[in-house]
Image (cartoon, rainbow, N blue to C red; front, side, top):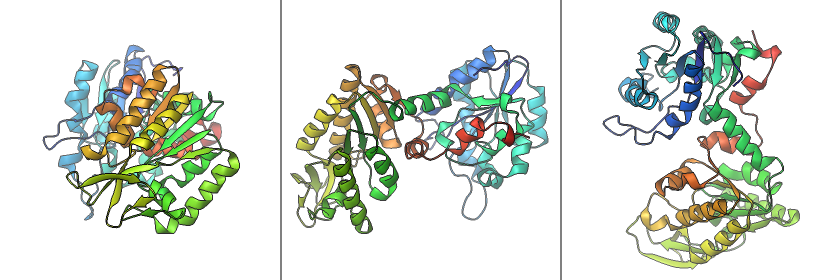
Length: 403
């Protein structure tokens, strides 16, 4: 961030979309903490900060706004504690009050605007709304990687109303890009990608891209059963995408043609019901009895995956190995997290992203043992799929996009 912040108002997009309990207490403040260094840098540089964020999905089906549950006022006390200073709050995102409060800010002060998604114009990327936002600041900083894949007003369109030299990335956004590029650009090898989750359809693009990049591709989670069924295996009532069997076969063939080792879980912890207290046994993943379903990887799969992870010099992990929310089926995800932490401590570079993967790392207190833990699930996925993220492109695009 090469800016002179002195006596400037910095309009900053952050990602304060954090989980709240029924009493509106923040249950995981990772995203807020991630934005603090950029906020403090502006304040230390003599600037004032106007923060924009969304929280949840406030637009209800009937068109009304769920203000009680999604107001950013819930964030103010904790943000003030983290910054060790009072934080002002504006009940509006745009309009006379927002402009008056922004204009009145003194160097070293912080103003949090109301939820950007209280306005339908935000998600539509409306230009008039974006222009009103832009009037609140002299410099625009985007530090919200978690929303960089959305072409919304506050994440993308607003940037065009700032000259190229008056817009940029915050520390978090830059770190996300830099660490992702460590995997994509000349990574230390072997490079291993571990992909989990429920559906092949959600991960087709990243699987295809990884097959062009990695030495080892490890696939866990429910999507593994689509691959087993595509090979003629018996998977009981495990989750399978019948319309993706050909896709799975094509991906397996691409791995063979590229010389990529594609590891599937050779055994599974299976259950007779989708419940933590179901009856459980372990079987080969391609020989699951009728009426049973695979809900986690088995011990042999854990050994295979661990060996591949520990040989890797660069590791990307996105997605759980099983139904991580149920303790009886969290073992595979935990084992992978531990293996990645061990490899990292031994000198490998590891990048973890995606809600369940990050939750596992945080629950096990292993975040400090990973090289980088991404704050963006969908955004990270799209970055690795090779898509241009609107929130990044809006900053990187030069003069022709400024007005």
